[in-house]
Image 1: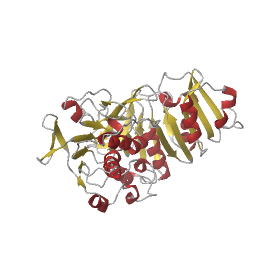
Image 2 (image 1 turned 120 degrees about the vertical axis):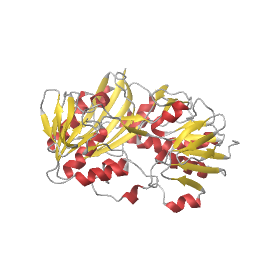
Image 3 (image 1 turned 30 degrees about the vertical axis):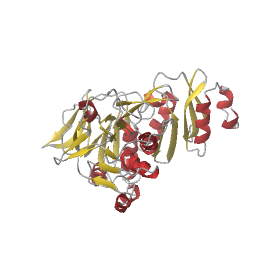
Length: 408
């Protein structure tokens, strides 16, 4: 058994609170303290760009646990507080309120933050990013019939927020520097589906463009200017060009950091007393045989069980395949696996792309490494088994909807 008596968790998002939950579920009797920068109870972030942003769900529905859960499970939650430094030798953290906390084991769950780009006018009133409830509330306040919203970037968050803006009656323009949104992730054929989806819902999508600046008047956004000089008038601008892992604390503490905090298969960092979980964890993945950092809900949800097991002194290895989902207009999608740019040599489709009811498979030398189901359900487990089999498949059968995935 572990000698850990006190666990401090840095970060009050889903990964942080699920770490505390997994420790208590595993029988950990020591003290647990979560240091959370936000004033909210820990909550799940996906609804911020979907149901909550659209006004379809209440914020309370995405809170992970009510306040009484923390009391009942003897988990101290310090809200609106930041960790400012880690002293690895003394095994303590310094907080923004001046206090210090001792730890036996430290869990970093600091998440990520929106990437910012050096655009003239990017700090003006009316420029929005999406990461927190407050960000979502600010966006909801500007959405409305006829409001002109211009998006810089066409990644997952940008597209989801664009769909929410259209549902609210906004006039939406997306400016994407690549020839198609999501191109590096999905490849040309599947990325085209998402481009067509948004255009069919009235989005003015411009691809292969360079944004020069955000235009303002008296410090307030008025439009977005391209390198060509073309200007798109805007009442609000949403910058959605990806996220950056928040690893400054780890870096300053001298942990090994490279595209996140480097951790082993149990999510333990270069310091045996410190773990990293969620967005910041660049894990040596035992199934994939390489390092992987995933900024998605399922990772924050599932990795904490592995961290808790390791803290309890049990054998621990996080082997889950990456998973994420999106909902945009009438399109729902799940993606399993990891097909990084350059890692696959073929994409096989089965189903009807025109109706947006299909499966897509990314393959490397005939082996499925990732799969996506679009408006087709109850197949994710079969796709996962296909990936884990690591066997070459018959491409004709893979593309044939009449052939059960389980028989491949």
